[in-house]
Image (spheres, rainbow, N blue to C red):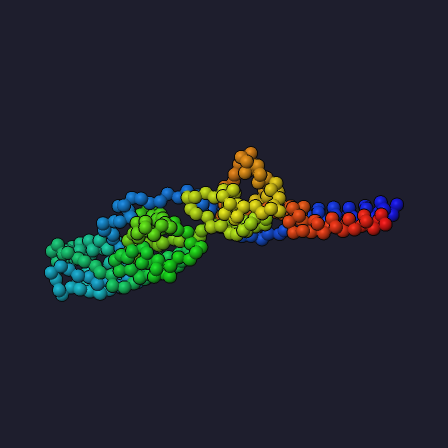
Length: 324
């Protein structure tokens, strides 16, 4: 009776230790439903859009303007567009300019001067000398308002804004007044080709710099880490596992968890990594802020860290005592 009781106690100790559950709680960031990071994006390739021969700046409230008439040195008024979008000009009075391009404004003022009988076929030119609208605006991962007179190169503007942080996507969007569709520019990662993306930007442009998506690889990977997603390059589970060094010895292949949050709803999907590896199950494409958790096998962990040998030694000791 004494021997069997000791044996049962030793085996119970071993089994309880080997079957202790692993419990983990996660509070990883969620993703916005419909996020387009890591999904195909159409890059603008039309050179007429990327490198326009001419660009007509749009006027707005606060712009300080200097007007000239070719051949007329006595008419050079300096005016600022008021909060109502209007200016007061000598000889013709109030003119509404807010939202007009420079060319349209020049034609309007020339027509008003001619209709008033002041000049015959006047050639009006407008120069924007200062104003809140003579800037390129950056929003997103980099932000600021960069002054622009005429045009500047994209990389010059990005540099003036302090450069791009590591969290910024290399694919940026430029919203330009007068264009129905935004320009989508791939800054690239190869310095030899980066000059192709250094396009001119103009006052009134808004550069949108989005955040690059990240996948979190945690648990029994050899190198748990966070992996930035690259636009236009889907990342699969096996690719992410490879970038994390692959599964460690103690990994529990058949109990991998893919944790995805959309809005306020969290979904946990259980996957068998071996089936994915051998083509018996699909290799899922990961989305921004996915969490991939690979738990430990308690038995493998015990073998790996030597605790199994210790437990077996304890059981052996119990048995030897029982037979004394």
